[in-house]
Image (tube, rainbow, N blue to C red; front, top):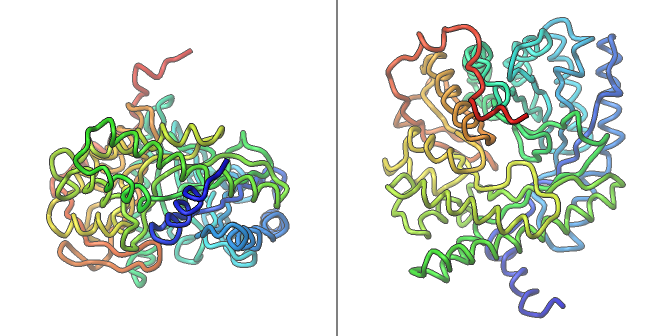
Length: 454
C-alpha cells in the first residue's frame, strides 16, 4: 500500500528537488518510407512523422496534468537516415533536403528535437554515410530541431579512424557555418562509440533497425532528488551512502516507469525502455556536480572525483534496474559542462580540465559532453579527442560520446551562451601539442582482444 508519507515524499521531489521526466521520445521506423525518388522519400518521411507523432505532445501534456509530474521534452527518434536515404540521396544537398523535411515535421507536431540524422560508420564508411556526414554542416545550419550523430566505433569492430579524422573536419565546418549563433550547430551534433539503439536523449538518439515500428522510450532525471537524499546521511559510511542512492534511484525510476506505461497506452505503441540517467540542467539544484560535492569532494576535478562518480553511477544503475523490467538507453550520470551549473563553477575555479573530464568518462554514462573549446583548435586535435573517447568506450565495452563545440572567434577566458537546457559554458583549454601524425594514418584501430566472444 502507498502511505501518506510516500505521497508527500514524491510531491516534495517534484516541487522542491527538480524531479522530472526529462523526455518522452517516440521512436519511429522509416524502413517503409524508403524510395529511390528523393521528393517521394521526403514526402513519406514528413507524412509518417506527422501521422504517428501528431498526439505525442498533447499526450505528454495530459499526463503532466493528470499525474502532476513535469515532462520537460517531447522528442522523436528515427531510423538512421544514412540507411533510409541511401537509394534516393546522391549528394550532400540531397541529404540536407531530408533534414529539412525532418525539421518541418518536428515543428508541425511540436517536438523540441528530432534525432536520427545518423551515419553508421563504426567499421567502414559506406557511400551514403559519407554523403550524410558531408551534409551535416549545411543541415545543422539550415534546421532548428534536427540532431545529427555518427557512430564511429564499437567494441566489436574497433574504431574507424578515417571517419574520426573526417568528423574532426565536419565539426569545425559546422562551427563555421553557425558562427553567428556561437557555433550552436555543434551542440546538435554528437559522435559515438557503442551507440545504443534505444537512447531517448539527444543529440545521439536514433531508432535502431531491430526495434518495433514505433516505441516509447522515457528518460527520467533527478540530480536534485539524489543530492537532497545523500545530504541527510552526510558523514555516514559508504554502505549507508550507497543504500541511500540506490533507494532514491529506485523511486525516481518508478516515476519514469509510470509515465512510460501511461504514454505507451495512450499512444497505442509499445513501451520500450526507461533510461534512468541523472541528466542535469543549468537550474540551481539540478546538478550532478553538486552530488559529487555532497559525496565529499571540494570541487569536481579534485582527487577522488572519479571514484565518487563511479560510486554514484553504479548505485544509480543498481537502484534503477529493480524499478523497471526494461532499463536501457544510457542510464547513469551525465556530466555535460554547459548544462550543469556545478560543472561550470568547477571549470571556472580551475579544478576541472578536459583531461580530468576524460578520466571521469571511464566510469559515467556517456562522454565529453557540451564542452566549448577555442574556435582555432585544429581539426586534428578535435579528431584526437574523439579518438581518445572512442578508445575508452571500445576497451571498456561502454557507450562513449563526444559533443564538443569549437566556438569560432572565442578563446580561453571567454564564455558562450546557448540558452535553455543547453546552458552556457566557459571556453576550456585544449592541450596545444599536435596529434596530426597519428590522426593522418589511414584505416581503423582493431577491436580489442576481449571483443571475441563467440
